[in-house]
Length: 162
Ligand SMILES: O=c1ccn([C@H]2C[C@H](O)[C@@H](COP(=O)(O)O)O2)c(=O)[nH]1
Ligand SMILES: [Zn+2]
Image (tube, rainbow, N blue to C red; front, top):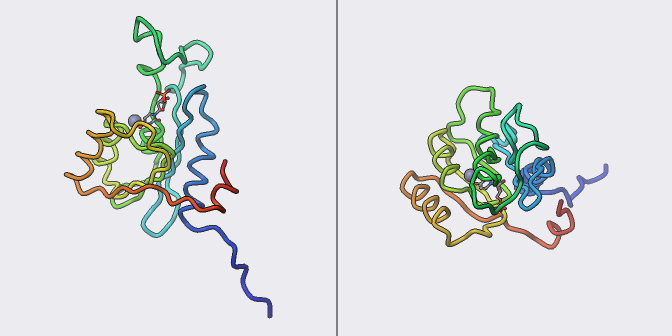
């Protein structure tokens, strides 16, 4: 009898891969963020990526990062991937769930993550580490008992990099 295949991907590689795949739907020219929310028994509950609210056309709203007038930048309009994943969830409670995300959550997403009952965050990039937003996220996560850690890349992970 043949033995089982050994080079299957880990749960973390699987869920971070799903999160990153979701991020490929993002229209943001600079930063594509993808998110996947998973139950404690490893069932995918929801996914999301950073984008405009329904009804707001990707071709009629700004994608610029800079502008004299904030209304001419993307920041005031984009729904963050974590909030989209939380809002996309049509089930009951997200209590005790874990959230995989390609970029460390901003302070606004940290609030939504905490209030939804999510208890663990696994993130890939933390390119804004040290900013006020990320410091605030970490302070709130620590106070609220939400655990967070970086996704552990391996040489194989790079091979399946999306
Ligand atoms: O927690 C977060 C923080 C940011 N995002 C999204 C929002 C924007 O579309 C980009 C950030 O753009 P930059 O050009 O890197 O400033 O990422 C998110 O989804 N979740
Ligand atoms: Zn955010």
